[in-house]
View 1 (spheres, rainbow, N blue to C red):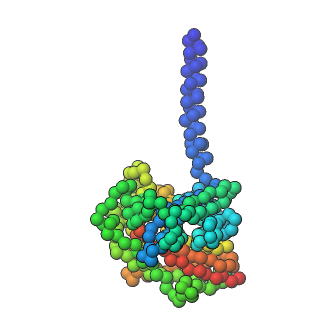
View 2 (cartoon, rainbow, N blue to C red):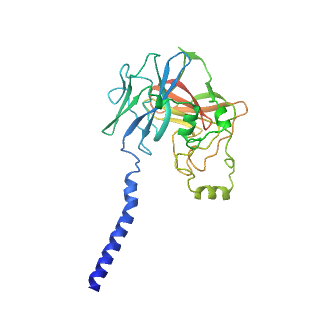
View 3 (cartoon, helix red, strand yellow):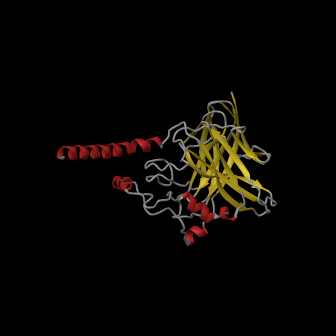
Length: 315
């Protein structure tokens, strides 16, 4: 009897150890570098002064490294109407909120605008509607992106207005266009004006070794995503056939929550110095010929403003 009991105990302990040791493996399967799907997301809508409405979309690229190019067509389209509604064809890693807007007419009513994405064999859809529950304002944006705690606000956050991003240069048909050759740098001068709100949280400018260690060991303070407030400008490829490299290296616009990530969602990230004249200089280089769209986002932590530049790259 004692022998059987011991064997039973050993079996139970062995099973428990197997289960515990299997947990990291199970979690590892949920953390993808490449090969996973990209899911479109509907963030909400807001009314425009002319009576139209803006439907706001984003996406979740389940991959941590893979950044697929999905051209407008059978794998990346809107319906009803024009399949091309200005959506990205280049998808950055992980969660990208409030990425672009689609304007619909004042008489849109209860219709749906559907964005369909197919990648790595998986098809997903996002449904844009004017349902009251999806109404978005500045407080919703700040809260959803992690600038505020869920359900919180302050006089400072309520007074905040988005930065204003102005890319320098002549416009063509209302848009900014540049021409370049493969391997040739394109200089992007951008002015960013901001009201200084929200103010960076205390401690975001500390860089001592002790502070870094303390912040690395600090447990999460809330269950929702957290973002460090502070003004920055970042450039990314929005569309285009080849690779685009930026100098200097750009702050990530996607939610990279790893501790030392160059991302406002990384625990050790600190806002960069703001130029005295508000002018930022970035240089972009292209690996292949073709038409590219570059996306500039000015972000103060809570709110953002986007601008786009088309670059025609010849061999």
